[in-house]
Image 1 (cartoon, rainbow, N blue to C red):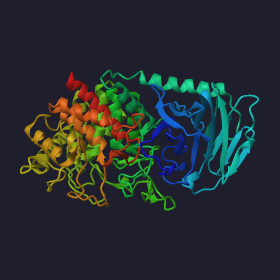
Image 2: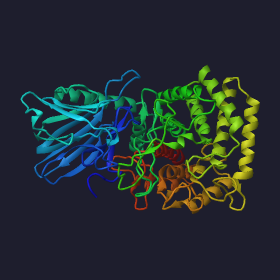
Image 3: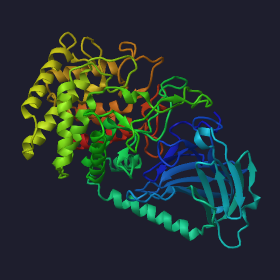
Image 4: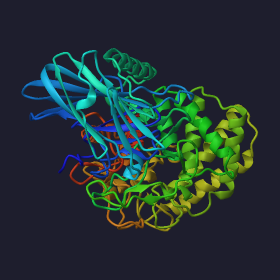
Length: 602
């Protein structure tokens, strides 16, 4: 496999709460969009050999590399060991704090020799706008300016007085190639700044100070965690990952920082996840709330209220991080795709789908936040009441469902269950706080949904709740039924459903979403097991009274994390990570499973 396509899992994530970058264990930044998560890429080698990259690695010597996070932070360290010495590349972006800090993004690559001496090769090869837009490259004594017109990238050299100038850098096809040799204890590097203007020489002390500020930011944030359970390291890494997927200026959270990483190598299940799904973000915020982080919930609620105020009563299922609903889907025909998996998509036409479950996830998160003291103001309540009035008139219809299949609408049981959750949580909030609303209407609809699910979503022959009315196929989304309180966790009908899912969708403790052969989804090929569902299975088992079995499934699942504790969306047949990476869904599932298991194990 060439160096342009390391395994998906061979990456760590860094970011500044407005965008993020993937750094491979070989020292390459091969995915970076700027200035936002959903902006066009500047480095895109992950999806095409000519998509642009920024690589730092030892020259001429065989080397081994190891990667880890500086403890309790999102600062990533890649260590290279050669015969002659050991060096490190320390990658980080200082988080943008507050809505008004809109200075350019600064991605810092600090290069350090810790033993012997190491010569590092440095390649910086940007390809703006998904490699569709040309740029000029100007090398100065202090760095390089890559200018594409609408956007630019400035490389500021980190050097000390007496260092040779950058004039030795070679420019080839708009990329800059150079090298730096360091002795024990020496630190150099460079800063990549979006729209940073003229290059300026940067002192080592300046980037060391930024490193300390970044470490302090993450440790201060993590100190708010109340988690003291058995899996602290994995839970905290998942929490940091969810935070890294947050767009600080608005409080929106993306489902993943990547697009078109395949759910099947060579297949067409390649989607753009750099947007905010109401469902994924609600569940992620809910998981952070359970760990004691409240700020994220308040910011996300404010963002959602603005979306609802500009809509027609209902919510779209997803938006851009700035709240725009425009997600027109197109394919980048000039890109080869990850290991040949095409099409490479940008935008997401599922944005136009009706998915009824999002109201349940949203209301449940608001309810959890309210129970933890984040009260709902007058405007917020009016917005929620309007949503529930809209749902009262619209829940009883076919929809596209949680998995965004492209096979057409159906009466999905999970969408109905979550509609029940929406009414139930709305009623609880209204009665707890004496808020005005159409309470009788909501109660009536809640009970209608409940009766309908038992009448049409339950298959008496199969003794299980089924994916959609009129079918007998199962669906792992239903693993959440007991978790949200629709059925008691040890209800006989629930235990037989759990046994059915185990029989039909679980292989070696990993869980498939559904069986596309039995429930066609309008797409060719198949996919891996869905990691959110595997963690959901752990939660369901723990609640149903099987904590030891749940623990085994959980511990097995932890072995599929990558070297720095990150997960993509799915796990393939040979244990490889598949789909967009890292994925919020998987990390929130891990947090929920750990919390439930800790409770069940006592």
